[in-house]
Length: 207
Image (tube, rainbow, N blue to C red; front, side):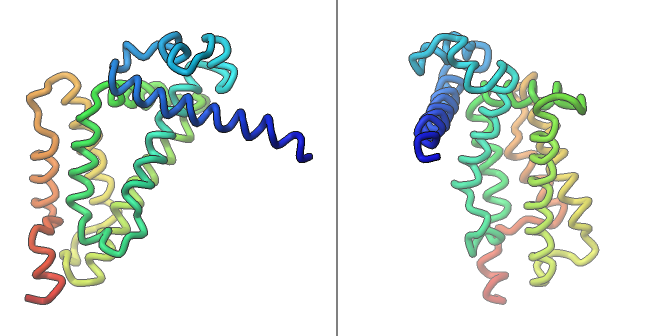
């Protein structure tokens, strides 16, 4: 048993290395520039050697997106005590982060579009990502309501879905027209929905 862990651990570490390098290459070269050959060269493997760790190009790209999400979750830390106070700022920061890497956005939109087929290997990943994002926003809205800092008539489930749908839709429009300011559009929407916490410090103290 102990001997079997060595190769497994090395394989897992190599996968992680490939995914982290892939994130760097896509950010630098863009989605179209991040070919399997480019990624393989970057980690010192042949193309077949690279795909050996994932099974296929589609699986590789799905895992790249999954790795991106894992890193984002670590950086965001949903368990932070002040997470809800900074909900709007965190949403807008995430928007800014996405638009700073058009290559990743192209990859994300491509995989998301193709994964609508139920038997697509990334179908469950994309479904779970949507579910998770809605859950995070819904949880934040529910807590704000419980603290009396958001109107009681706001439906957290519907609002969470609308916020994420707007975010997703604006990303697609931005890929065609870079003049669209996703940050300001999302800020406007959140304010219109009563989720503007720019005065959260005074709200928290009851001032």
